[in-house]
Structures are given as structure tokens and as C-alpha cells.
Image (cartoon, rainbow, N blue to C red; front, side, top):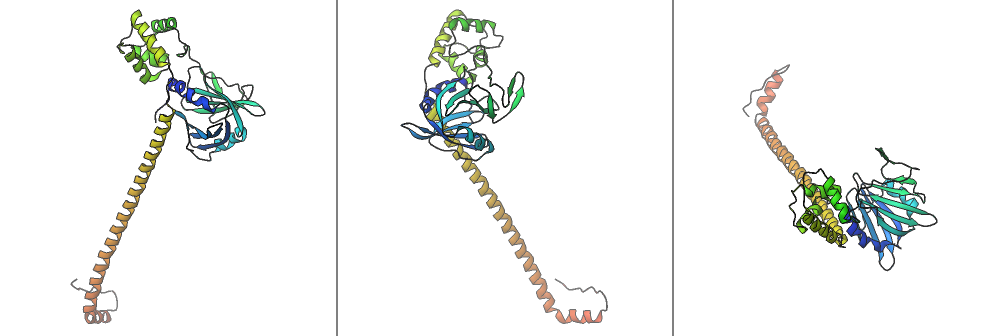
Amino acid sequence: MKELTSLDLHYLLQELKVIEGGKIDKVFQSNNTICFQLHIPNAGKKYLTVILPSMLFLTNKKDSGEGKFGLSIRKHISNVWIKSIEQLGFERIIKLELESKNRCALYIELLRPGNIILADDKNKIIMALDYKGFGTRTIRPNIEYEYPKRDVDFLTLKEAELVKLLEKSDRNSIVVTLATELGLGGKYAEELCELAEIDKKKSHIDIKEIKRLYGAIEKLRLPKKINEQLAEEHKEEKEEKKESLHGKKKQQILSIIKQQEMTIKGLEISAGENQKKGNLIYENYQKVDKLLKESKGKVSVDIEL
């Protein structure tokens, strides 16, 4: 499955603004898929589907399930209003600000291994799908929620900051610097190099190339619709998995039928042989009976079968 980059989330967020003012009705969970059933004014029922750690989109189709986390978080956020939705910095993290009697925040992290975290109005963690403690970051109840921050934000990056970033970089190519230092990932880093007409394998570029690169960055920041494509890709992937599963089950059934046919054939052969032996014994009954009567113990009867 495709993994959303920080830039993908930036694009997607413009389309997800439609859920602001909507209400969360229910929450469903099936393994790593969490589906929020929403009611949106003038749009009706929609489903915000999260597939951890890689995907997020709005759709008309429900991914149902009754996972433990889904049932637990449902108690906290059913029938709450969505006041706002935002991307935190240029990270792969979405924040939903929720409001009912009290305010709370729902954080959707598409950072591996992925997480969903609910915090109170003071940003203290109420619950999370995955509790962890590593480095300087801890996810557990009653701890203030904090997220990892980049030194440079692609969305607000100035040309002078870009110059400094490239000067300090020790990466072996410009495309790797853009992918890692700016958090663009390989796809958009290569697209930037193409737009700016820069050899992506170069480790250093001159001031003219930097200006072209910054111009390409400004173009890449422009709005772009991707939600419909993401929802369609998810639908196609589910259908492919269903067909694959159906194919496997069909093969299993065919294999069982083949084994049963072989067993029946073996039984038929065995029955035929036993019938033949029975017929021969019947034909030689008097001889066999005479030998058995003459014998007081075990005898060996020589009959040509």
C-alpha cells in the first residue's frame, strides 16, 4: 500500500477541511484500520478512514469492525463536534480539535508504526492505540502529548533557508537531501529536480540552480486534489485482496476434491481386488473347506489368485 508523505497530507488537508463543523457519530476498528463515521452539514454521512501507518482519506464507504480500541475510544468521542483539522508542521501527523462539553484533541500519526492518540483540553494523553516510550518521546496516559519536529518546514521555507540547508548538507546527492532534510520522500524530491532541471545526482548546485529549485518548491506547494484517488486505490486493493482470497479458497476446495477423488478411486481399486479374491475363493470353496477341516491349526492354502 502507498504511504502518504508529508506533502501528500498537505494536499489532502485542503479537501478534509469539509469535515470541520461535522460530528463524529461512531468509531469502527478492524486491526490497523480505524474508521470514523461522520455527519457533515450539507454532505451527510461520510467516513474518515485511517489505515495505519500509511493512509488517510474521506470516503462514502464504511470499513467496519469491532476492535477493542475502537470500542474504547468510541465512549470518549461519539457525538462530539469537529472544530478544526490541521497538519502539525510538515509532519505526517493530523490533529482534530474536538468539542462537546469539554474540548479534546485527536492526533492521527502516520509515522511508523502509526498511532491514534486522544488528549484532553490540557493536551494530556487520555488514551492511545499504542503506548510507547523511546528516546525523549513517551506515549502514555496523563503525559503531555508532544510530537517530533523538523528543523526546517517545507511549507514555510524561505530561499535563504534553502541555501543554508544545502550548504550544511553532507548527503551524497541533491535528491537525497531534498527527500530526507525536507521530508519530501523520493517521489517528490525527484519531481523537484525535474521541475528545476537539475541533475538529481549532483551533490552541490550553484546559485542559479538554487533559484530554479526554489521556484519549483513554490509550484509544488500549490493545492492538489488527491482524496478521490486515494479512496479509489483503497477500494481496488480491497477487491484484489478479496479476489485473491476467493482464489485461494477455490484452490483449497479443488485440492480437497482431488484428494477425495483419489481416495474414492483407491477404494474402488481395492474393492475390485477384494471382489476378485472373493470370487476365486468361492470358486475353490470345496478345496478350501476340505483343507480347513483336515487342519487342526494354522494352514497355508495355495490358491492361484
